[in-house]
Amino acid sequence: MTMYVLSLAFFIACVYCQRNRVDLNFEDGRLDAGWRRRLSGGRSLGVTGHVDREGNWGIGASFTFGRKRRSAEQMKLFTLSLEVDKCNFNLYDVDRDDLITKEELVAVFGDNKNTTELFEALDMLSGDGTVNREEFLYVMHRTVEGC
Image 1 (cartoon, rainbow, N blue to C red):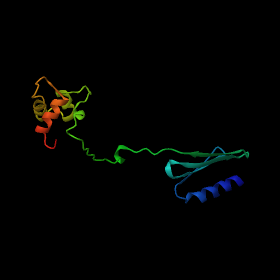
Image 2 (cartoon, rainbow, N blue to C red; image 1 turned 135 degrees about the horizontal axis):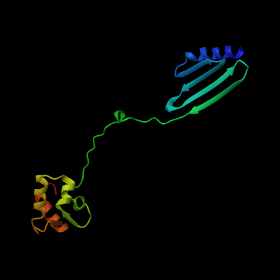
Image 3 (tube, rainbow, N blue to C red; image 1 turned 60 degrees about the vertical axis):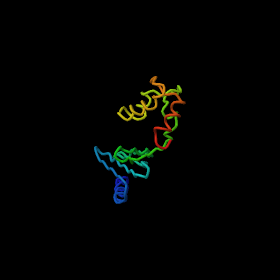
Image 4 (cartoon, rainbow, N blue to C red; image 1 turned 45 degrees about the vertical axis):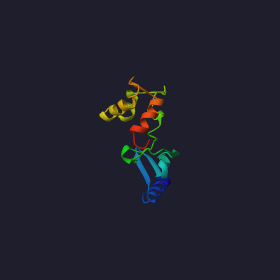
């Protein structure tokens, strides 16, 4: 009987605490009780116990911790801007073979009319379908503003 009274007092004391959870279950002559307190950072403390009519009893304690996961809705979006030296040959020579192909310009700027016109202007000296470093330096300063 004493354990029943203590369990009831425990329950009443903890019911009014914030972030606490108290569970009581009386079934087939056995009283099961549990208390869990949520802490910050996904952690929690817990105590459980039971007692039956014959006086058998048991207690347990637990500590859990976890990592909070952010959902996609909670993530902040950033707007980035990148400034590069548009007159740098290596910016366009994607495969680093010292030649710029139309495909490499398309990889940088996308497949559009302006990319095609820029490549044709850069390749106007040799017309061989590639732009080497010397062609690039000679033509770029004459065809692109700021170079």
